[in-house]
Image (tube, rainbow, N blue to C red):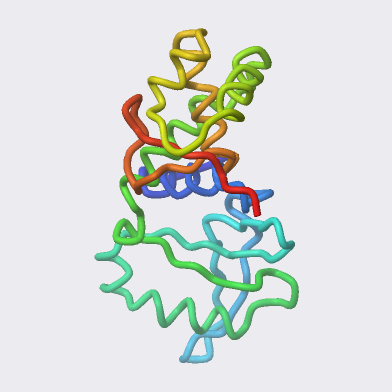
Length: 183
């Protein structure tokens, strides 16, 4: 993966840790478009994300100040009207204003602890299968009995949406989680 800024890195982390995203292509092929003056130009999106439903999102990442200065939203609308068939179903613009610092923090944890640990993951599933109501991660980790490995396994369960946060917050050992209700 290639990223040129901290803003791109944060966006990439959010994409690669999102269970609804199945593939991320960084710096996909440029698309050509004709600007309002009739001049042919090209634009390279920062990412092309394929979603679980098969749809594709072309993602441009730019600092908010630059977006405003060059009226980049108008450029993206123009590009969107001229996109080749099948390139993307949606164009998204990400600036620092769209990035939720809590979501970025949690995405960093999901990325850091993404590698499976069969023993800890199985123990976390066993402990949380009996969970009724909410519990703190450190309490659940103590029941797992594998130290930090248990906490990391619980974080993987949050990422995979088998556990839910009770509040939108940065994940810490004191975070309350609850089981996903079965319908």
